[in-house]
Length: 189
Image 1 (cartoon, rainbow, N blue to C red):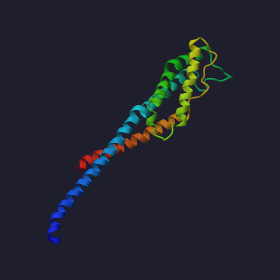
Image 2: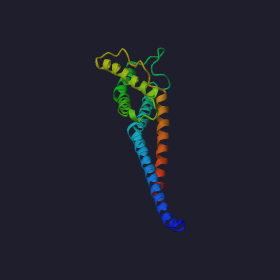
Image 3: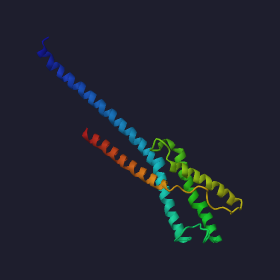
Image 4: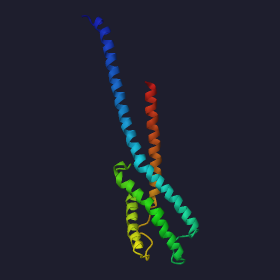
C-alpha cells in the first residue's frame, strides 16, 4: 500500500486518538479540580467557616459585654479593680457565653486538624487551645466556690482573628475560582 493511500486512513485514526487523549486529560483535570473543591468545601464547612462565625459572634458578644460592664477601660486593673457585681457578671459571661464559644472553636480545630491550610498548626491555634484549657481550671474553681482567680494564665491570642479571617477569605476566593472554572468547562462541552 502506498504512503499516499495510508495517509487518508491514518488521519482520522490520529484525530480520534488525539480527541480521546484530550478528553481523558480534560476529565482528569476536572476530577482533580473537583477533589480540590471538595477539600476546600470541607475546610470552609468544618474548620474555617465555624471558626470565622464563632469568632465573629464572640467578638460581638465581647463588645456588648464591655459596653455594659466597665466600658472605656481595662476590665481588670489594680488601680480600679472590678466590683463584686462586675466579677459576678464576668463569671456568668465567661461560663455561659465566651467559654462555650471558645470550646466549640477548639473542638473545630482538634476535630479537623487535617484541614488546616498551613503545613503546620498555626501558633495562634495552639495558644487558643492553651487559653481554653487554662480557663477550665478557673471555671472548675468557680464551681467549687473559689473566686480568688478570674483569668486564665494564658490570654486569648491576638493573632487568632486575623489568621482565621485571612484564611477564610483566601479559601472563599479559591473556592469561587474553582467553581467558576468547573462551570466554564461544563459550558464549553
